[in-house]
Length: 76
Image 1 (cartoon, one colour):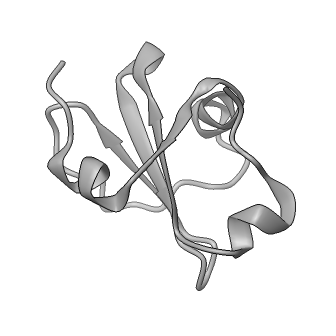
Image 2 (cartoon, one colour; image 1 turned 90 degrees about the vertical axis):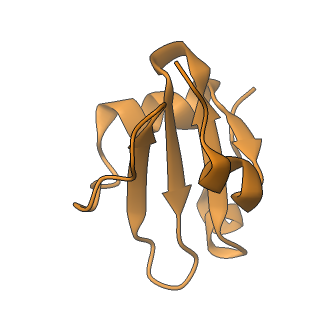
């Protein structure tokens, strides 16, 4: 199910699981920063641009998860 976009992304920190590609994202309300974390890996240190294809695929086909689920991660 698609993640709400637009103003919704500015209402809170949003955590997304995109199981098809075994990746999760977090988008921060404060500054719009986007971070990526592949299953069984640590979060990448570099920021992801909003136009990143994988991030946009996750917005379209991923599911919103909680901060705890994001932090715990998943095994591939």
